[in-house]
Length: 124
Image (tube, rainbow, N blue to C red; front, side, top):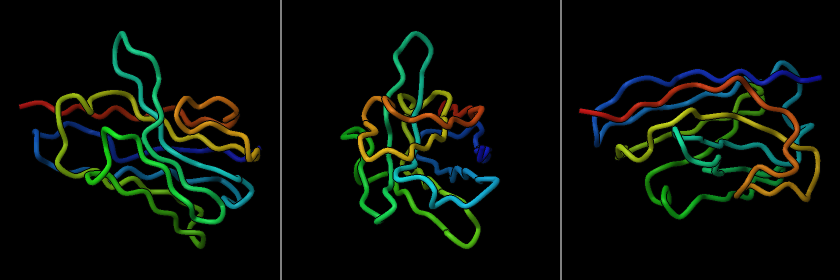
């Protein structure tokens, strides 16, 4: 079982930037899709951005133009560059992967490998 470990969260002011990293303990390309999800207090989990094995990408409407997902196959790591952060971006960010082509990045349905999460807080 490949483990996923997130890092890079923290406290940032509105308008600031953070880069999250998700390091896989094994070959990251075993996942057909891998991506980032977040959950704010009192809200349901939502998909933020995902990348497929073929490098196709998905972004939630709320983050388009501000967030960028990328993958370094040599380092078995996926990144989420977050710019122009807003208070509504606050939440626990999880990295997750699926070997299925039917994984739903919007909800996380079908994603079966999850990291422990990293907290992102956007506040002045």
